[in-house]
Image (cartoon, rainbow, N blue to C red; front, side, top):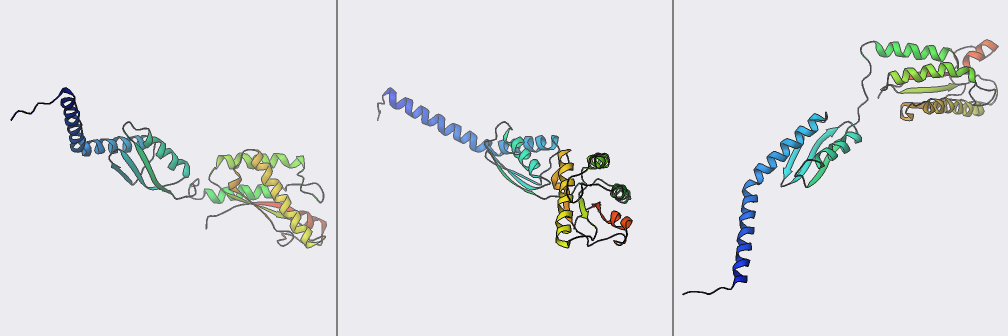
Amino acid sequence: MWIEMNPTKIKLLGIVGILILLLCCLFFKSPQIEADLSSRTFEALKNKGITVSGLTVDGRDVTLEGFVESDKIRKKAGEIAGKIYGVNKVINNLKVVYSPPKVEKSGKIEKLQETLTGFSAENIEFETGSSVIRKTSYPVLNKLVQLLKKYPGVKIEIGGHTDSKGNAEFNLNLSQRRADAVKKYLVEQGIDAGRLVAKGYGSSKPVADNKTPEGRRKNRRVEFKIQKEK
């Protein structure tokens, strides 16, 4: 039996046939497309020095898995994957695991602490009874700035100390304000605040006899110590 079809129906059947053919092509070529996207994404990350332990592709969606050392690297990895031609969406499941940078070789930390102790011995001076740093102390603080810039992975404690004259609570507060003032100066010179811990000890840790003027002068000090990771 001959069924007569009008041109409109013929066109619709043609379009449906083409769509079915395209879907079939996409279905059978999907594994090849996924493998290609995976390879190009992995290579792009590698070229930027980023290694991920897991990279899967589902259709045109890329999922990143594993651990990286900073949030900056995590974001960068997502941006790189998103720029790969053919990628539709990036699912960034990378987790950040912070680890302190290694800036020292054997014995170098000890030598660095010796230098910091030397800076401590030069004594940071303040206006009497205040946390205003005297300009005569700027040269030693500037040397400390240069040292910290040379070793960007080092984190230090700035310890403020006073002699035993006066009220103990006042001395504790003054020592903290002085430590904070030194930290503020270093930050203003470009040192990351996250690398500096300011702590006031008041008169609780004397290094000399508070009964003599010379002893009290030695006890009024700011000490710099490398803060070890716990």
